Length: 464
Image (cartoon, rainbow, N blue to C red; front, top):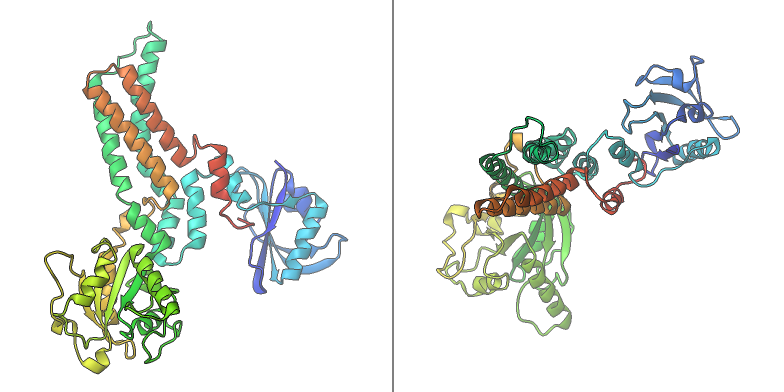
């Protein structure tokens, strides 16, 4: 493979900047841009140990003093000879060093090309490669822990028993067919059925993690709704920790949806502050109300904000609001705002329920001004979107590609089991079992098509 190089740091000035190089024979290229103080060439330095030296431009002039690390293949991130240069984080210095590497024979690395080489060289499977970008993009500690555990093979370890069981029955069947003279015990229908049932159970448990995986990775799309001037924008500002939305005493101030991300109970909420829902003749406000309804229809969670002054037994407006969401398809929390003015606590809020629509998951009373009750809201959100058990970290399906491949594998397993139970011969049954193996292989990367691999690595930044 060609020798590739890229800046593996941000494009803004920083204390430390990093330039990465990878490819067989890259030691000679690195030697043209780095002169070690100990006098030894880069490829003769102790592996994985930093050495002090001078960074040189294309003309051999010193542009910085810094450190180099040599990673000989195959025991490197990419599985091939690699090196890193750590210098001061001036974008000008990093660009000059990169230009010198190009002059010495390297080329610019594409997005995710270092990790793609790690995958192609067998250092990572596809689930681990996806965990790299998930770790980079993680916005919560829980998301980072899950990605780190998946990078350690957490998801692969859940798939391997399924893969091995299916391989065992299929390989034995073909061994009997291809080598009839050998003393190979024929695979029995009971063994096939047991392997298929076990695979079905394992894949079902895995698919049940999709929702938690999506919450960890993308957060919870949360619509803050209510009547005009109920305290919706104040709640968004309190959760975001800044004045993100304009707050006034004038009803209808918020005319468009305002979005912000915030942690609440350890859960990443994608907050959408919506226009107050009411009938209005104002054309602009009516557009805002329409967007508010759309936000509710696509939300994973609804925070229904009331100013605490409305009679909680009057369900008319609340019923109208929830009806617009498909009668409570998403869970919702009743939030009584302005607690500093009303003095109402969660225990003093009357029940808001009716036999023909789903009541709230929780009642909380908060003050966006003083912060009272926000802890109760965090507790309610955390209960609705639990992070799961610590041992589950790394074994959650976190994107649609993984879910789709696992679902195809389970469907194929179930078809095979149904065919076996209906009396079809093992060879017909094993066709579906092989399809399940292919789907699992696609998930891990063993049988993934080039376009799938390319699409995955296109999400990466240059330098990783």
